Image (cartoon, rainbow, N blue to C red; front, side, top):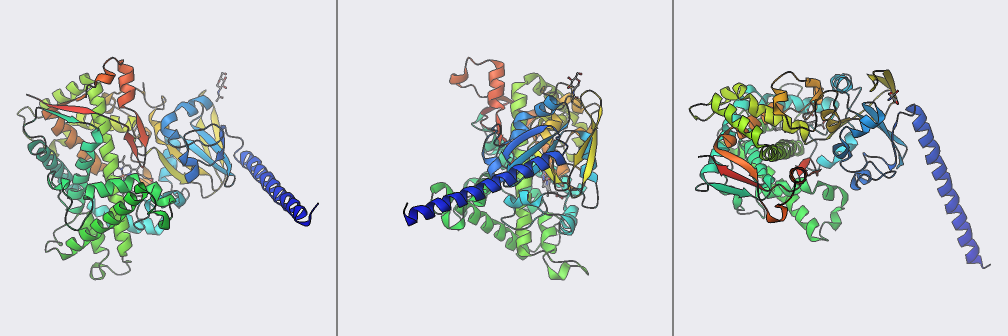
Length: 529
Ligand code: HEM
Ligand SMILES: *[C@@H]1O[C@H](CO)[C@@H](O)[C@H](O)[C@H]1NC(C)=O
């Protein structure tokens, strides 16, 4: 044996032993983890579902719960184990336990508990902090400060502004883009709904009115429209997270991502400068002025900490993201459902006609009477919740108590550091709370329903601050559009002979990128005569 051969062999043994020791340690850690959660039934996988790697693969038995597992599986794993909590235990990168929850009482208790007992796992929110620290991806005193700054912008007065801006934007759509057309074909529903939601948040949140015509031209000094920049950024957040800066020039897709991030940053900076230079800044009480006042030394009260420029941009970005895709995707699913179920569409139309018999334009004061419009919006959110999982962690050793499928009281042991994730689809398709959960029944929101089993906006202290904003926008869009147009699925020759079930599955096919989105949704809007 040569000298170098020997050393190679030694090296191999050394590496082998270190590897074996590490594997043994992981195995022992994993056993200890299972014991610590008292072997709560659930998935055993190599990759933790909360890691970027664990999210990259589709659900694969033994490897990872995978991307979108909460949406894909809905309530089925809970039903399988007969309990509205199941566990996930993973080996890698270290032994990690998490629990998924579809029980309304437990979710409510966690969401409303004080004293930092169940904080957000901020590591999982890194993906949305590129433009700066913000209200969604923060905890404790920092979060309190942000929430206090933005809360006044979500007043009753602002909801009225949301309603008026929404109606204006829809009428502008009918009078310009759709003018003179009895039939409008939209190849993918979100091509229509993303701009609607963006224009509403632009107008009502940032005092930045955008018209349908303007939005198609790239302004001087830019390479993309505002809409395209924002859209690409939200689609490509993962690229930005995974690809190092030096590699961003390597492929066309990466370069497109880089341009979109640069462009969006430029737009946001311009928005701030425009407002700072504006004569009317005192009159505005919107989100942008709230954020900017907090960034202005002269406007701070004693003891308040100034928002940095990066915090202003980070928060503007998060409001655009939070208030844009979520609402837009919900509209798209609502149109798909109304198109698939013409009887429900007719019911909505008749309801609107009863509330507005003279055909006048509805105002914010009509909103409480337009209950069926709101019910369609809610039922869509129940069936297609844009945000599928709401993650928390347990800051201490604790227990959770619930009854299983046989009505037996069970106590779940939760060690400190365990991930506690609300499964929104698990809750929304839980037959314990919703009769025929797979059936589109807007009427269920007209009667009595379980408030705690409806979680599209999360709940508790960290619930969505824009909930009323988006419910207002939802009722306005559905009312004005459905009072003047019908919606149907576009007929395409290749699908001419499909069954209703196939058609339904095709048009309702959905995946999450940042939020749940329809895969491909070709629609036709016909003007009512
Ligand atoms: C259908 C539309 C919407 C849905 C489904 C939705 C959903 C949610 C959910 C699930 C959360 C909790 C996220 C978490 O715990 O990580 C949240 C928080 C938030 N949402 Fe919404 N949202 C919608 C519309 C809006 C709108 C229109 C705005 C703003 C104009 C907005 C602004 C926010 C903000 C700022 C937070 C963070 C609140 C905090 O942590 O204090 N959302 N939203
Ligand atoms: C519920 O009861 C059935 C019938 O006795 C049993 O097979 C099942 O394992 C029980 N489920 C749970 C979660 O205990």
